[in-house]
Amino acid sequence: MSAEEVFAGKLVDRKSKFYAHLYKINNLESDIEEVQKIHNKKYKKAAHHCYAALFEGKEDSRNDGEVGSPGRVLLELLQEYKLDGYMIMVSRIFGGIKLGQGGVARAFRNTGRGVIEAYVNK
Image 1: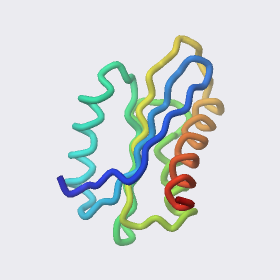
Image 2 (image 1 turned 120 degrees about the vertical axis):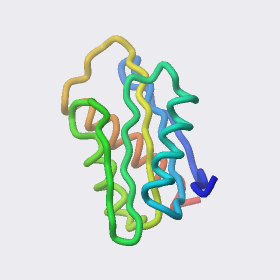
Image 3 (image 1 turned 135 degrees about the horizontal axis):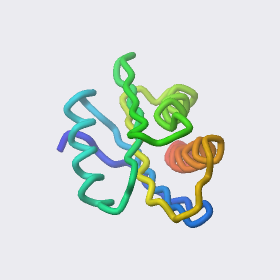
């Protein structure tokens, strides 16, 4: 595996669980595919696996059918912290309470920011 997990964390918001993992990547396309497979297997109950990746100035993100544009939110975090060569993947297990677009975006932002800050401040 060329993608290396550097930090992980979890946030619970109104019974929904958000699992965030930050990876150091060496290739945009192949590492994204590799991390997606890992998360699909690890979080089988997750309804959505949203991500953002930044590598050598190229960017990619995915909302995976989730409302609130979480892929864009996660990409903005990578850009804010100047994490070129990194990918963040957040898997959400729905807890039965709808959060709405704003609530979903906020939960993804808070989960992503928490993992990134814990990593850069370690």
